[in-house]
Length: 207
Image 1 (tube, rainbow, N blue to C red):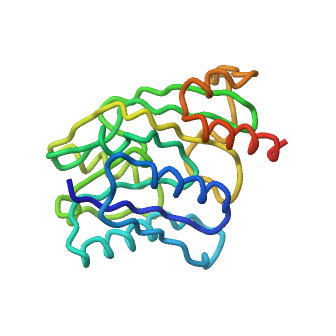
Image 2 (spheres, rainbow, N blue to C red; image 1 turned 60 degrees about the horizontal axis):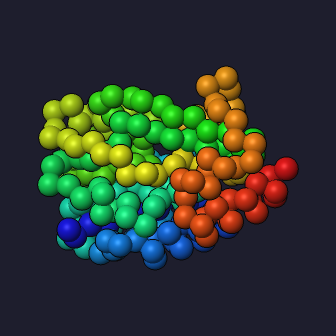
């Protein structure tokens, strides 16, 4: 499967970005291209959509139609792209797992019919007519996908929450829906050994 990866970045979480590239190097199924969209932000406004669109343009110029959004602060298992292979128009996961590194807590959200952005792949040719929003890109993509052929899998990715830099989505502030993981045992069971050691060290920096 020929595909590209878009990694939007504002340059505000260097260590997490380095870990992201470590994860991409370990993938059992490699992308044809990785577009690391990292340029100085013009202001403090959310500009995720603009960065994703820039990556889409680059992928199109290189003749690649299949594309994945990878967020630089999240966890991806070694076989992530292998599990996310698709012959449809869009692929994602109807289950999102969040882990808050600062507070050592996690939660699992089931949202049938859509996926979080960090677990989304699509054919660029199938979303050309979509109006890209300034915010909540994942919601717009999956609303548009109602007219497309989609597939859902459970790839084992985890949305890592930390509060560093300009953060979108929810999960950076813990609430009653989070489950305590005081000893980080749950996290240890769900990520590779090297990533666990990285997260354990990063937790100390957040406190």
